[in-house]
Structures are given as C-alpha cells and as structure tokens.
Image (cartoon, rainbow, N blue to C red):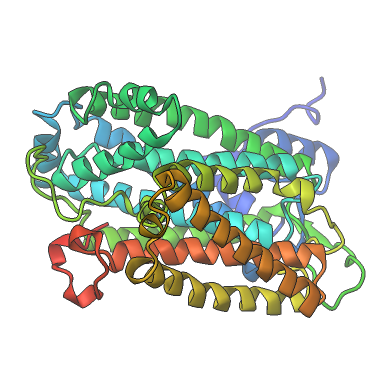
Length: 471
C-alpha cells in the first residue's frame, strides 16, 4: 500500500477536530474516499441521510417535535440512571430516598425535577408529533408502518409515565395509581386478573411498587429503544420526511437538497441546546410535586388519575365503565392504528391540513368541539339522567350503549353536514372528525384537571381548594 493510500489520523481528525469538521461550513468531503469514510464513521449520517430536502429544514413544518421527543428520551435515560442509584423500591424506604435525594445529594433535587418535567413534556411532544404527522399526511403510504410504530411508542410513553408516577410513594402517587389501575377492572373477563397481576395483589402495595419499578427501568425502556431504532430506520427507508408543499401548488415541487452536515446538524444542535437551557431553568424554578408519604387509610378528595388519563376518567363520569374504559378507547385506538389504510389520498401529502378548505374545516371542527364538549358535560351533569329514564334497563344499556349511540349519531350527523353542506371530500371529512375528537379529548382532560373538585363535582378553578389542584 502506498503512502497516499494510507489513512493517517491528523490533529484535525481528533475528537474535537471531527466535531469542528462536522459542523464546519465545508459540508461533506468532495472526494469519494473521504465521503465514504465520513459516512461510515459518522453517527449523524447513520441517523440521517447525507442530504436532505431544503424545504424540510423549515421550523414551521416539523416544529422540531420529533427531535425534541428524542432529546427528552435521552435526558430521561441519563437522569433516570442517576436517580436509580439513589432509590430503593420499597414502601419503607422509597419516600425517604426521595427526601434524601432532595436534601442530601448534590444536584439531586435538580435532577429529579428535570426527570419529572421532561417526562411530562414527553407526553405532550409525542402527542403533538403524532398530530403534526397526521396534519401533513405523513401517515400515508409508504409511511403506514412507521405511523403504527409511532402510535405504539406513544402508548409506551404513557406507560413509562404511569409506572414512574408511583415511585415517589407519596399520597399523590399512591392514590393516582389506585384510581388509574382500577380502570383495568372494567375489561371484560380478564380485567380482574390483569389488575391483580399488575398490582401484585388486590391493592396497591409493596409488590405494586416493585412491579412498577421493574417495568419502568427495564421492559419499557428496552422496548422503547427498539421501537425508536425501528422508527428512525423506517424514516430513512421510506424516503425521509414528507416534503412540505403549499396548498396552492397543484404539483409536487422540485426537490432541492443540501448536505445534512452542516445545514441540518447545526439547526438540531442549536435547538437541543436551547431546549436543554429551558428545561434546566424550569427545573431550577419549579420543583416536582411531592406530598406526604403514602397513607392507604387516608384518601384525598377527589382522588384523580394522572393528568394524561383524566380525559378517560372524565368519560367514566358520563358512561358505564365498560363503555368509558374499554369500548370508546378501544375504538379510538383501532381507528388510529388503521388510519393509513382508509385515509389513502396521497396527492395532498406535505400540505398542512390537506388544502385551504381543509384549514377552514379544521378551524370549524375545533370551534364546534370547543362548544359542544363542555355543553354535553354540563347537560349530562345537571339534566340528563339516563339511568332514571331507563330504570328498567340494564345499566350497561341505559347508561352506556344508549348515550354512546347518541354521541355516535351526533358524529354521523356532523359528518353528513360537512359532506353535503360543504361538499367535503373523504380526506377532508376524516380531517374534520379527527380534529373534532382530538379537541374533545383535550377539553375533557382540561375539565378533569381544572374543573373537578371534591366529590368529582364541577367547580370553578378559583373555588377549588389548592390542595386538590395538582398534576
């Protein structure tokens, strides 16, 4: 081998030199050997293609939600490793470990706050990322498989937050998990068995804490890493991000590409540093909630599930438990997973809200849901009494299937109105119903957080004792 063919590490190829080259203005090497060497050795180019469409670099297209979700996952793993070193999953010691972490461990309180708020923000960003993908048509072929993977990851994010919620072993965590796990009992036939399996017994106790801890630090993170790896790989295999288009463009735009390094990497680095700074500042100023040690004999009033399940708990106040906890969530999840197979129009992929009329329909669905959902909650709270009106009928029918049928008929009527009155296409009707249902879920969650007080009755937020307002 000649001296020119040998690859010799120079100072510019040291660790700092490689970073400077990766972020420098020169982009990829011009010669083929240098390009191949850089692609093989560079982690960035394993996650990203060497070039990306210029239009996908726009902040207002992706809002950085996928990157932020990934960043939060990394922060949670790193802070979780540290917290795990200072925690014992035992009812007699868990709460004391949290107190010790807050007072006796250097930066322990900051890391716990950072872990807590990052986990809560992860639920929000994962949900918003899923909405962004839907609104730009990124769930359609050939990206249908990745949409399903994304939905499964969102479920895992909820599971990770739910299992971690109990670990401080305070009153808030104990009773939130008690309420949250009780929903499982309503699953027909196997509900009781699944609930006892998860709790390790008939109620929340030491086995529950150990089960939740084991799931939180092992099965859920490992599964999440596997799905994230598959998700990233599918993004590249499916051709990268959908290319943004304007609603007035009748044909797909000509794709112009730029090198990932430095154009995309610089944006990602600035975005990550900014969000880390925001999270650190928030964690320094706002402590993660911690109430008194868990007391099974003293139930708070009201006892609420974690905030991301309060929409589901709100449904339990209006429907029979089987309908609220099993049928409605099951239908919603099934429709979400199958969405790419009946929303198949690919001509609008990359256009936010499909078209100009789609934007109007989305605003109409948003406004309609903001009016109808609170009105329905108030009517059901104070006027509607299905059980009394249909007293001779089984409660599953009178307080479950009948009101569900009324809601479904209302959605069908809305769909027909949009179809006939506004001459909406199938994809615009799907968009309308999707926005309506998502808005309804957000409203129900907000009602559960801010407007439910003692006895789970409706109150104005300023009339509820502050001890009952917590996340």
